[in-house]
Every structure is written in C-alpha cells, then in structure tokens.
Image 1 (cartoon, helix red, strand yellow):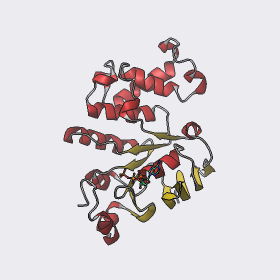
Image 2 (cartoon, protein in one colour):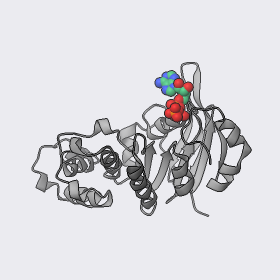
Image 3 (cartoon, protein in one colour):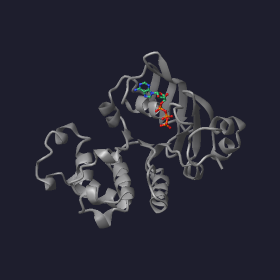
Image 4 (spheres, helix red, strand yellow):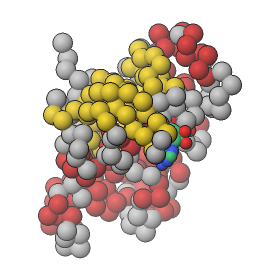
Length: 255
Ligand SMILES: Nc1ncnc2c1ncn2[C@@H]1O[C@H](COP(=O)(O)OP(=O)(O)OP(=O)(O)O)[C@@H](O)[C@H]1O
C-alpha cells in the first residue's frame, strides 16, 4: 500500500473562540493532485495556513513522510519539503523572470540566502534551476523580461515556479487560476496536472471544471470539517456535496 506523503491528523485551528478548522484529518498520497474544495468560509485556506505553518495549530498533528512537523515554523517546513505558491504581490516586479526564480532557489539554503548580492554566476545550481523552471512554466520566451511586465497568467505561473524552486515534495496552490482568462486557465490546468509526475499537489480551487478534471482525490470541507472525500466522480454525485454548495457564493458550481 502507498504511504501518504502528507498527513493531517485531527487538525484544529481556533481564532479566539471561533473554530475555523475543526478536527480535519486527510491523507495525501504521493504524486497525486489532492484538491480541497468547499463553500466560502469552509476553512480551506485556514487548513492550508495550518499545514504550511503560516499559523500555529491549536491542536492536532501534521506529518510529512511520517515525521511529525506540527510544531515547526513555516521556513523549517519548507526544508521538510512543503512549499506554498507565492502571491503575485510577492514577486519582485523589477527583476526578470530568471532573477525571481534564482532568488527563490537560493532562498532554500540559509547560507546562500544571506548572500543574495554575490555574483549570480556563482550560484550555478540556482541559475540552472531557474532556467529549467522557466522552461517548465512555459516562460522561456519571457525569461529576461521583468516580472512586472508579464501578463497576469504568466505572473501566476511564475508564482508556482517560485514555490517549485524550493524543490518541494508537496506544493500547495491556493486558487492558482483566480482572476485568469480562459486561455491562461488552460495553461495553468496543464501545468498543475504535469506537476504530479515530480511532486504532490494540494490544491484549493473554485473552478470546478479544473478540480473535476485533474484531481485524483477531492476533500470537501464545510464549516471547518471534512464533509466528503473521494474521487471526482464520487464527489460530483454525492448529495451532501450538492446540498453544501446550494445557495453558496461559489463560482462555477458543480456540474
Ligand atoms: N485571522 C482570522 N481571524 C478570525 N477568523 C478568521 C481568520 N481567518 C479566517 N477566519 C474565519 O475562518 C473561517 C474560514 O475561513 P477560510 O478563509 O479558511 O475559508 P475558505 O474556505 O478558505 O473560504 P474562501 O473560499 O472564501 O476563501 C471564516 O469564517 C473566516 O471568517
């Protein structure tokens, strides 16, 4: 049996007296796309925050390859193989695509991160990582352009690349297609699906067409808890899921 690469066990996150995530357990299998969906306010982003160390857990456990990382801060979780996509606002708009990727690659190693202004050639490995990532992201043609001049879709792909530069085992993507046009959505969908050959993807996505097409497993959350978990076809047909989405603000809806 395949062992999960990432496990959340009974994870609870409270903000004051409000419980945003209330005892969530999930097993994420390696080389899969595992999507987390649910109506607005279901607790998806808070679960991501808790898994990646953006916020401390109230209780519960998180294991990566069976190692407990529950109390590690976010930057140490990156070294254990968890990476989260950056937001467009955290790209360096005046630096080129390659420079952004190189800095992200350097950032994994604490020693290199402390010497960001050494000659770029001296960071051979980081430069190579940046070049191969630009290719993978279909950004080779714009690799010498400042990130701020890219289209929205290209910037969002670069965000994913910044997380990949950390050479993660598991990459967390929070609504990677938000604000995108149809063409860009297709490119992002292909990119995410292609990632599962080398990585494991945990995805929050409101576009149900994408979720249903590329997910291996879907966890449906409601009111901070897991409502249903399963393969896309099973989730799509589940009456509890249909009811949960009725009247919600979610875009796309279930087909
Ligand atoms: N820092 C915070 N302090 C207090 N409450 C919070 C905080 N962050 C989130 N919440 C609350 O926790 C609940 C879950 O929010 P969360 O953002 O995790 O939901 P979500 O499923 O990601 O929703 P959406 O799809 O709208 O992004 C919401 O009721 C939200 O108001």
